[in-house]
Length: 184
Image 1 (cartoon, one colour):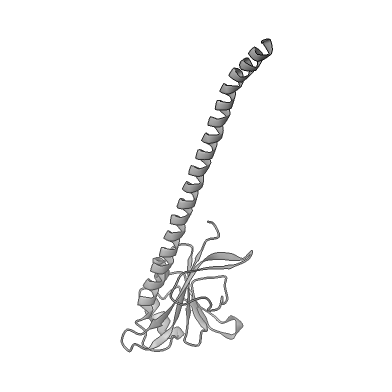
Image 2: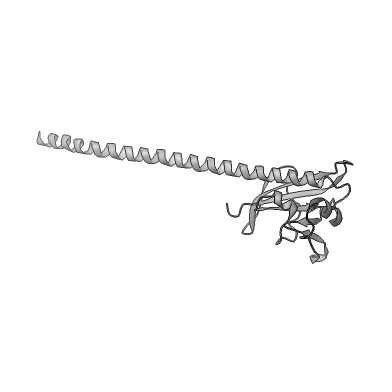
């Protein structure tokens, strides 16, 4: 009889402990699930916003570049891209190709972590706002935003569009916008 009373007392004492443990585990699971959902949705919406930013930037630049009537050259790009201020243009002659490098006028339409690359119809880069890159090369799909990265060097979103002249409808080159996600 005494043995049975000890068992009842033991179960009575352990019931509050078990309930406490169950509520703790349940609370922890709910809190973890909520945190995971909040993190995932925040990450999704921030990346979606960054992709949208790339899409808008490439279209703004493409519209400006469509004022050119023939294949992109240093002269017609300088005229179209820098209508307001040509004083900050710098022509880089490294590696045997001439490239315009600048940080003014058209770049005012970009986010701080975006760079423009303009290629002629032969896929040679002739303009960039990136002071470090000599030529990343024209790669990736045309017309859609994609994840662009090289391990331990850079990562971000890129979009490449073909540019056609407004007046003639002729294909004049490519524009590419890279949005750096290195700090993200």
